[in-house]
Image (cartoon, rainbow, N blue to C red; front, side, top):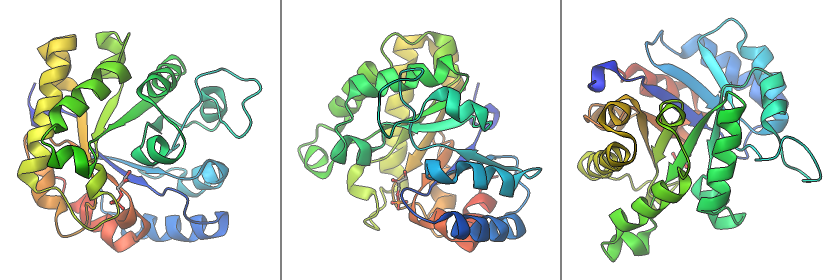
Length: 254
Ligand code: 13P
């Protein structure tokens, strides 16, 4: 399988932004401005706004996703949300292991693995985030860091689990900083990730997996990043909060 046959997923991560009222307004603008696309369009909104967002995009090409999912089916886990709760809204995607979760909320490769497994068991596609920080890049240990995150994050996965997941490569130093990885830097790591997946699950599976780039992707740099052989979409923060910019990014998908 080659790039042309893989599913392109353009996903927005709204992080902790927008009230329910603002969510409705921004989605109304998105509905007007987004071009028709062969890509899967996804917006991962704060959990409290998933119902509002689902109603707002009903009947359109826009999918609504979550930013997290707990590993247990239910129970005493204050403030967490379960796959069943997401399923009840028809949510099909959840971001797992975002670097902000790892940095500020104690997420580890082990909890990432448990959360991703719970998504898969619940029929939700986990978007599993990996990426090195600035110090690791400067020490030239990016690939070692990614290898550990991939191997531990995907521990126990079958090839089928892998095909039902997405990997997002998000270098931490490029998130919200305006510093994008160059298309070559992003491609190098995404290709490395695909190589790891080939070792773990076989080449056919590795070729089928959507690998996104994330980190200051915007209306100006998206076309170059999305044209790379191993970059099958984007996970977009700031630019997904602006309908015009997000529409331009979607229009870059060939
Ligand atoms: P920015 O696009 O704002 O850099 O955020 C990227 C990100 O973290 C998406 O998950």
